[in-house]
Image 1 (cartoon, rainbow, N blue to C red):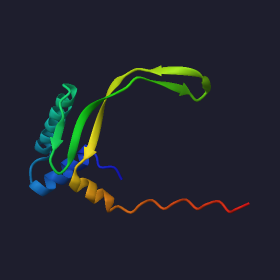
Image 2 (cartoon, one colour; image 1 turned 180 degrees about the vertical axis):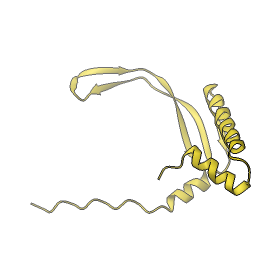
Image 3 (tube, rainbow, N blue to C red; image 1 turned 60 degrees about the horizontal axis):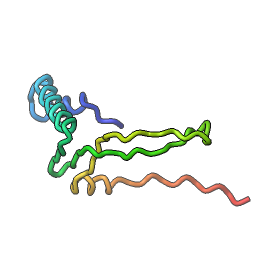
Image 4 (cartoon, rainbow, N blue to C red; image 1 turned 90 degrees about the horizontal axis):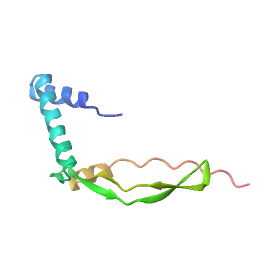
Length: 107
């Protein structure tokens, strides 16, 4: 299941008894401020949740799977990285792991 912004608005609105539009405004402004900070290259640290930061991926050479003999230069670029906080990491670790697919019978 995917948790959407709309799901958050409804859930928070029900819990706080605030109007959905008010909750949406707060959530959207929060996300806008996070995006603005990252666009400036700042780190965003939310205690007990995690840290967003901009990292630069080095330039590298890739391969086209349809033409493996051709090198494809991939330029350096900035990407957003997220590192989960200690409490979130602990909660995620409690999730059951996916069952391994059955091994094929020996031939």
